[in-house]
Image 1 (cartoon, one colour):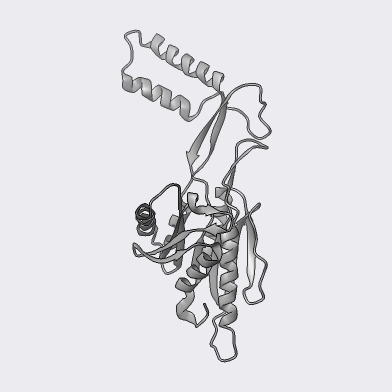
Image 2 (tube, helix red, strand yellow; image 1 turned 90 degrees about the vertical axis):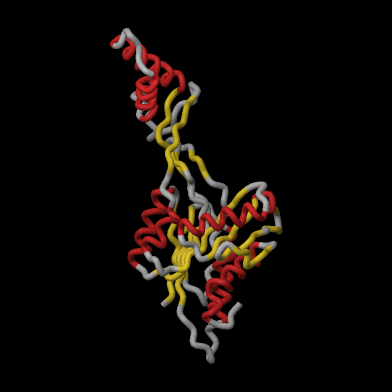
Amino acid sequence: MKHILITAGGTSEAIDGVRQISNTSTGSLCAHIYEALAGFADACSGPDKSSPEFRVHYVVSEKAMRPAVKESLPVTFYPVTDVKSVEAVLDKLMTEYEIGFVIHGMAVSDFTKDYLVEREALVCELADTLKNALDENPNGLSGEKLRVLIRDTLKQPERRLDVSTKVASKADLMLSLKRTPKLIEKFKKLNPDCFLVGFKLLKGASEAELVRVASELSDKNGCDLVLANDMNKIRAGRHEGLLIKSSKVVGRYTTKKEIAEGITRHMLGEMGDGL
């Protein structure tokens, strides 16, 4: 049994009980990839072919498009919301199954909420902190000590808001964000032998820049393939993309269907005559 892991859609990070910061990824490209994989599995299942059995584990955000399930390619869907939930599911799947192929197409948020605070309340807290410190040190404080006081206050202000319910809109707010873990770094650490497909989306980038950034992603995380694309070249009916392997362009595509078939061909092509 060959296990394939696909991540699709975009994560959402809660600001309070009702508000969120969301990535806009629809998950449609990964739906096309599933269909291409199903076509490959179907092409390999003829009576004269020694066909490996495939199963897809599809980690998908709540609002993302889901592909229609094909008989030739069994799939289990794992609904997720934020980065934390995605990480938990990935850890579980990579531990429980021998995942041979990973297509990490999900737009994972780089940041999540740290805290929310009323702007004026934060100004007053900073002012009180500095005043008390200067009262205790009448000869003044060095710039470094002032920076430490400000940094410590901003790190965990006492007047931060309770975000378990909807925060009232009576005052201007300041939202502090903290970085999330880079989930693409986990796959090769959990299974060094898995075939990893990464994705990189830029805006207004030249081809040389796309290749450079995709190569950096590959080198850092052990990607076997990276699909690089420019947001300015994605529109209705057209989705331009470059498939990068070992810092070289191995495929040029203009639609999601072409991209999906190209990734499938490069990832699984040696297993049969399929695509």
